Image 1 (cartoon, rainbow, N blue to C red):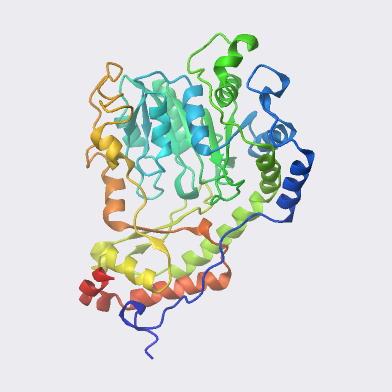
Image 2 (image 1 turned 120 degrees about the vertical axis):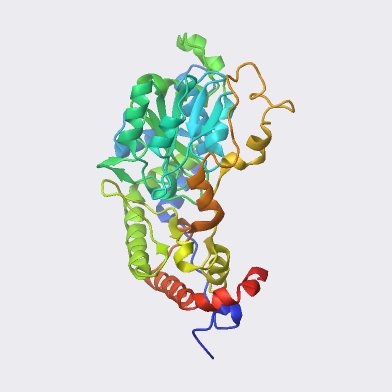
Length: 434
């Protein structure tokens, strides 16, 4: 058998095993959850002004540990990072009709958290190397109605926070850092997510550390922290007895995380550094193995920050390769490499194309609170659009618990496909049908 023949065309498949799924939970988490269950206190939140307004002992302990670990004054737990984003947008005082600049290259909740408060998402383009918000594009999208910037530390590397915070200060804007995918990443020695006015991390099951679902919001601002806690836990009932006079966005929710999740989170947090380091070692091994493959750009990591590789992103130079991304993607998949060929361009989702969110009449875009006709047409974010349409492929590092041998198999599969690029080009019609 021709071992160099592509699996797509009948050759042997390079990776013939199922990679072990990533599961960071161990005995410590099991024991911590067991102790909470045996205590009978699965939640201790009360949605009134009371000592238990802040939750039970494990919630408060986890928040203290998170504040210490990330080096901030306040950490507030929530039942999902989507809840965290909603709370963060509300806590900074966003008004209906305000504009918030956000990236299109992110999970949809980054933008819908803005819409939740009847504010208007404005999409700026991304940096072609880091995939994070491009500061120049952010500044170009600022209008008299802009009130905040939502920065997303996508794939595991911090955005250019010094530049973005300088822009925010110049224009009097608040900054939210959506660091869902990058807990443990550093920017100039500080934790990503802590350099904005408010930021935070996801505890969803496929993140670096997880409690099934959940999120951690971090801030050094006492006022923002109080408002986060209020929005999390039925604010409208609490404000009177607590003596809160600023009622803006004091709409109550139940965004509370339970005692079991927080007990597990305490144990997970202890392991975050080791989880991050092991993934960085594997990613560096992968980068070394892919070095020299023509027309393939491995992740760019800026000198002043670290990358925690939630996703391992790659860029194809289609002119040099003279083979389409679809053909390469299909060939890699056939060899057993589960790469994706797109991420997100959320400004092109039906909600934004049709400008229809609340009800059927185009609210908030068609209402008096919307100050101008914000464009979501294709072409407003050319870098993000080209990546999504033709040049990006990515490998979900956080999906698997990889070994050195697994990484070497991935490298072998890439080299096999690259050795057959001419064959792939000639037989492209076959690849398209697979």
